[in-house]
Length: 68
Image 1 (cartoon, rainbow, N blue to C red):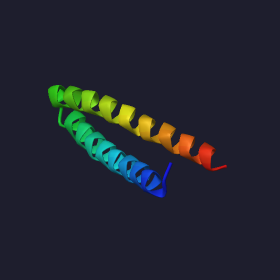
Image 2 (cartoon, one colour; image 1 turned 135 degrees about the horizontal axis):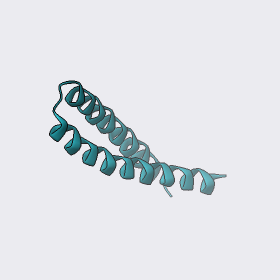
Image 3 (cartoon, rainbow, N blue to C red; image 1 turned 60 degrees about the vertical axis):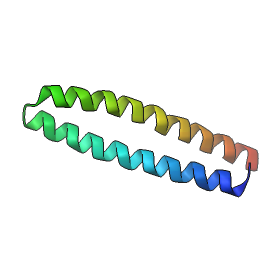
Image 4 (cartoon, rainbow, N blue to C red; image 1 turned 135 degrees about the vertical axis):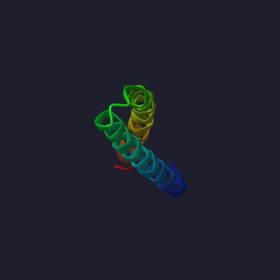
């Protein structure tokens, strides 16, 4: 893997994590406001983002292993 691949992976992981934080904050707000429909929609979104974060974390681990 190239340094560009590593940088892209780290950047993608950071973006996914930021999206997760934003969606989670919105979900918490929806729950506090009693908007369970919106909270449910955001739960689904969070699940998808969690998959992305895991994918990028696994890729980062793979890169680190290759670099050893």
